Length: 153
Image (cartoon, rainbow, N blue to C red; front, side, top):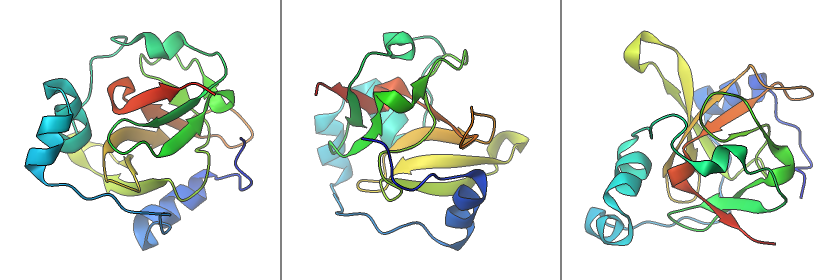
């Protein structure tokens, strides 16, 4: 399920500065609906842009085949073939399954310049993307495991 378009860092910055790709669909719920659907930790990470503790999930070391979807709306985001062990304590991927499943926001919190990744369907906070991943893309999508769910193929 490899993406036909190889995204690179310049593409990510362009999306963050000039506008994100159009998603296939949008899911909108009230805050009360999200709170009812998600656990306290899931809500904190996905709806309040929180971060789970590093190395707190077994998902980091799971590298068997499969796909990963957004916990909030079931949008397929990543294929396990793009997953790698980054040593950071969070699941890492090199590419999304399609260029329009992730939206990008410049994040200048904590005195850093980063690019936040959110589900382009429901705006759930997923993590951040960095330009220090493996070739050929050079991207490292550093995701909160609690914002993802593995879907068996």
